[in-house]
Image (cartoon, rainbow over all chains, first blue to last red; front, side, top):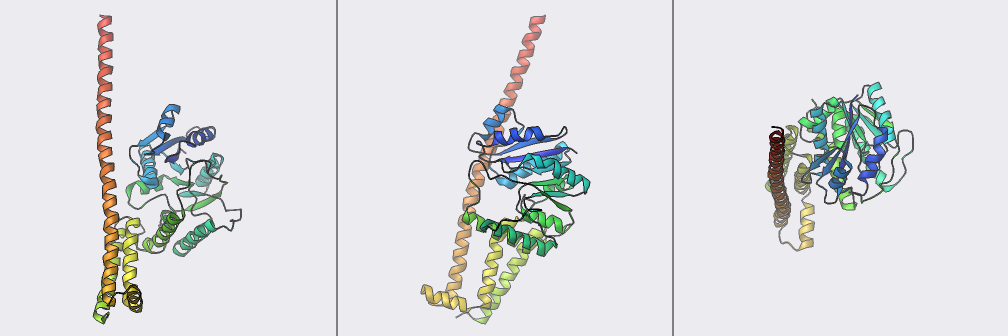
Length: 230
Length: 130
């Protein structure tokens, strides 16, 4: 299976080199990676060029969704079988990619989510409340529990890549996963560990978190119902 | 006073807005994030038409003479906010579009210059050989 590891990077100059260097030893023979620089204002693109990393350099900032979709389009055109979303800030660990891909192949899944809580308990923290609420909303609409719906480590097969590229409203967010599940996509979860982010600041502060939650809840509970499921 | 006719009108209008925006999403013509405002807006109108007491209470609180004026004010305020945010988005889009066009033109020029240099270099080599 030709896998593309898709690394969206926005102002990740401090961690992008470590992320890519950490990833390289784990790449199997027919795997590739690509860094999508989302119009960063720091040296992300320059560093990648100096190091000779494979880089998709967006001239303007499109947001995570736009950067992710740029990578998806590249994967579609280059004929990759699978794409995995991989954080540029060093949260995701590359040693689990093989396991995720094996699971996808073995169980003939469309999506594999790298979940922190398949076999391990969820810590009772405030930010896990949001994760629980989204999980509940997904349970209500699609009939299935996801243990870690907000995990950004998601692997998609060829069918999913095509769907992402050809339609509006497909972003790398839990509501898309919920919608795809309603459309009959087979989703599996694979236990992974994640590190705390090593550099930079999280995109989500309090007001953004509230907006994000509101957006996700309305999107999953209300909007997904009216979207046609084929 | 919020007359019953106005309440029915508010209710129907907000239901109509909701159905319209949800249909746009169904046909993949609108982004989910953009629909958020309209869904909340029509939800607010539905609540106001079903429970006019809220309008009475708030107009008393804000010193608005008639509750119906409060409803108009609220709608107006929501529209001004939306227009303001839209105008910011238009500015951002314009600057991004400008940047894209400039980058495209610069890249094409440097590409063609690189090509010209390359072909000149080849010509020189050939003339040395002969």
